[in-house]
Amino acid sequence: MIDKSKYTPMMQQYLTIKENYKDSFVFFRLGDFYELFFEDALLASKELEIALTGREAGAPERVPMCGVPHHAADNYINRLIEKGYKVAVCEQVEDPATAKGVVRREVVRMLTPGTVMTQGALNEKENNFIVSVVSLAEHFGIAYSDLSTGENFAMLCAKQNQALMAEIISLGAKELIIGREVDAAIFDSLKALKTLVISYEDETQIPVEYQHLVAELQDTRLYPAFGRLIHYLVRTQKNSLGHMQSVSVNKNEDYLRIDYNSRRNLELTETIRSKSRQGSLLWLLDKSKTAMGSRLLKQWIERPSISEQIITERLDVVESFISNYMLKEELKQLLNEVYDLERLCGRIAFGNANARDLLQLNRSLTQLPQIKSLLSQLPMASLQAQLDRIVDCSNITNLLDQAIVDNPPLSIKEGGIIKDGYDAQLDEYRYIVNHGKEWILALEAQEREKSGIKSLKIKYNKVFGYYIEISKANLHLVTDELGYQRKQTLVNAERFITEELKEKENLILNAEEKSIQLEYELFANIRNAVKEEIPKIQQIAKVLAYFDVLQAFATVSEENQYVRP
Image 1 (cartoon, one colour):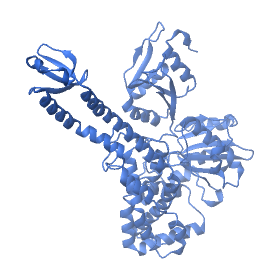
Image 2 (spheres, rainbow, N blue to C red):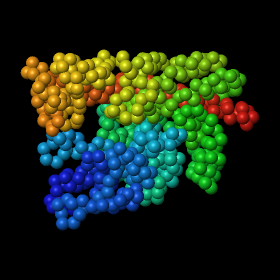
Image 3 (tube, one colour):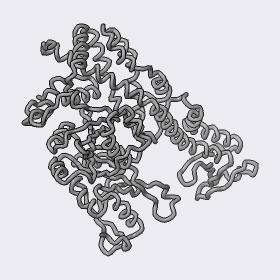
Image 4 (cartoon, rainbow, N blue to C red):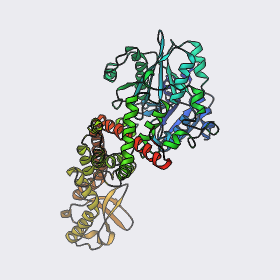
């Protein structure tokens, strides 16, 4: 136990925060850097191959320390996540300029292998599942989610260690949430899965605000596992999970169960020798044009349906695509313009989406009328229910067309995002910024004429702002009527200001700052407006993924001369 009293107040603050995140690296914000201390620093410096230094912190010995620039932190965090570590991001939550004493800091988000949302850490063709297990009287309750897409699933599993292990392995889970009721034998089996990070959560009651996600679940035995999962996600993400979708139930009688050895030997999703996707059944069949389609195909392969009705419906669509070759090819071209709607929704829900993400969303939704029109030409009345779920999104596309520039920057806090004409106040600020130099030149000409001093100049520096400079030879022409206020005396000149010049300066210098701040606020409002439409977009994404997989089947069938069974 570290004696906190011998350290500086800031280090005491760090140690207090670290006590609550003992199993995680704490990225502690200090100015433009995230710093790590003590054991975190020793381990992170090795794992990230960064310099280990030390910091004076009140104790006789220097505290081990290493750090990374805040603007590059995602890259370092992703590397730790890939190695199976957890990261708690601790930010300054008050302005250092106005803080009294130590700046207040809080952990604002937790990043773990099962909850990571950053694009660089995710495989677009695979789900990133986090799994929760609850030990029931006669079964294991299992719930699993992909936080990046908002998908939720639940199932019951036979109360046998091997059966539980097989289910977890089949999901390719990155993180497992368990509680104290899971006995030691099961825990030891789970720990043997080296690629799996184990976390803990004892609460199993579903919070009231998330009970609507299980409203259609008839088997209440599935509730505790989902309750445990949602509690863990709420606790670690410290964010609204408004994009989470209703829980789907995987029933054993609905799909073919494949044990681990059979799955491995059949090389369903990866080859035995190289563990690579190339050469597997998934690799052969995946002619999907969207990331959603690729992920859905992987789910179908890992849990093949044994419902004759579902299989027949899929084959009917595949046959229709083969019979309508030009329609299928046109559909493929349109789907090729559709981005990952599910993960875009996740980033929008978490407030992480930038302007380029919204442009990708807009470009994707713009394809919908043509996609729906094409699919409606397939001679299958049974598809109407699916097509009805591709609803009108013109309110979203119209908003984004009007608001977001065609080539926005990555940052959302430096301006250059919102189109001219979208907001009158923003346009006014921009006019002031863009025409400020013209105003100064016009004022300079005006003052020359008023004073009769042809060499009068208006200049600018960061110390004084804008000022009028008059040479010593012309000082006799400066009269009280001009209203000049002496600011500085130089060897060869005098510097003055006027009320009008200061007004212009305030307008010009404040306009740029206000413009950038207003743009950020406008963008946040637009993003929030789109956030309200997430359920609609997620519904559409599922339909597009469904047809994308089936056109992939049709394409593979044509290429390899497969026939309907």
